[in-house]
Structures are given as C-alpha cells and as structure tokens.
Length: 72
Image (cartoon, rainbow, N blue to C red; front, top):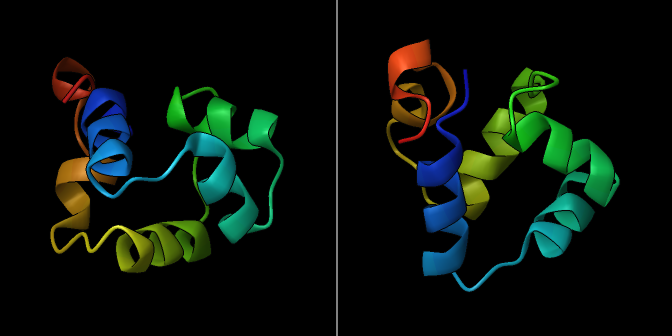
C-alpha cells in the first residue's frame, strides 16, 4: 500500500501539485488520485519515476508499507 500522507507531504516539500505529478507520469489527475489513495496500485514504472522526481531513496517506506502504516 502507498503511504498516502507521507507521499502527499513529499509532493508539498518539493513544491509539486498532484496535477503536476500526474502530468509527469503521463496519467490523468483522477488516475493519480486513485493510486495515491490506494484504490489502484502504482505501476513499477510509475514508482521509479516518482522516486526520481521526489528524490525518494527508500521506496518501501512510501509504496510498500503495510495497511497499519499507510497514512505515513
């Protein structure tokens, strides 16, 4: 599961909006929202791009957390 709050905070820290990141991923804002809120899983290629864009070193902490820590 995605750590939604943690990922949203990382977007904010980098001065990016969800719309900007959706554009960088080549997906719609709605698709990004679904993925961010754990309704649809991110693809491996999207995780790789997000890690690069947001300078995330520990992808497990953001994208592969358990249900109890999904809020970040």
